[in-house]
Figure 1 (tube, rainbow, N blue to C red):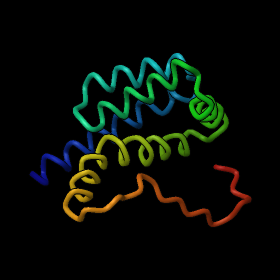
Figure 2: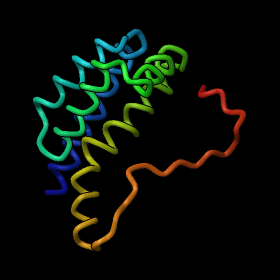
Figure 3: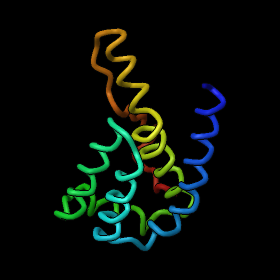
Figure 4: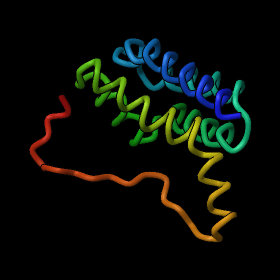
Length: 124
């Protein structure tokens, strides 16, 4: 099974490299279509998370509007890292692992932990 998981992760990360340039010029409608399409190809629990993101994009939720601004202002490498860390590692690959560990250890695990080395980061 580890070989399959490694191959799956490799494919997801390669797809992230293809999607990153598209997101730099995306708007909320484009994100809605992207999240809706991705949710059709995934299984639970990722499917429901992507559907929620799609609806948030459709309603122009402030968080999604902020992402659009960040994607347009950041360097291409930064956008690629955001996709890999926030979407692929956290939602696509990590959600099922997180759910399994939560049930195994009977505790709540945060989705994201952030470490900010400086407030002067320009996201480049």
